[in-house]
Length: 263
Image 1 (cartoon, rainbow, N blue to C red):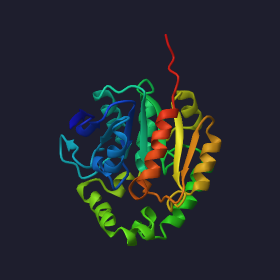
Image 2: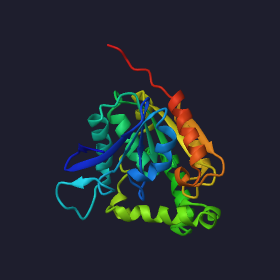
Image 3: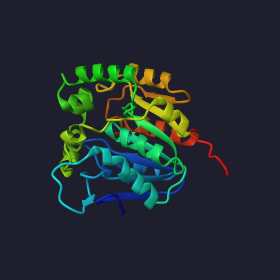
């Protein structure tokens, strides 16, 4: 366990295994321990890094805060990249964590070769994509929160893991209200393309928050991007369907590379 200094916060992170680096960035209800099924499955082949954004998990603030600025989240990821001295890392975001991951990748292309946007458009600034995502959200809010994240079949069949899933968020201080400005002033498609950082979209077939149709359209609009759709998987597929999710992440880590310019 280690800490990285990031603008008034000591960002908690863990490093497991050895090999090409994968850095997981959690969503609004998660923290470093949410990735327990990924660490166990991937650490034999990869260096797996997990972290707590400010307001989440074991991250420590220099001064008490009642509100958190989500615009600072990507700086927390950058701080971990620098502190762990990672190069050629693949950042994997989950939901809102994808926005922080993409911005961190664009800020540190010398350390990040690729970014995987899990169940998210990464805050990309594009009028058509914003309209499509807004329409998906309008449908999602009609459902209870837990039904947006996990399938009803899983909730019934795995009451134990569903209970644990709900408990994970109780270790966090940041709230959904703190995330209101997370995707403000997001990067354009051109900025992502010009960065040299490879981008992949990772979607669940049964995601009730962001439809496969919307994610597919983002993939079509971003030249050189990759698309992985996991059959039968919900929004929180890292939790509910870890085996195909882990396989997709490993496949992307093995194949996604960004050629580095040499002086």
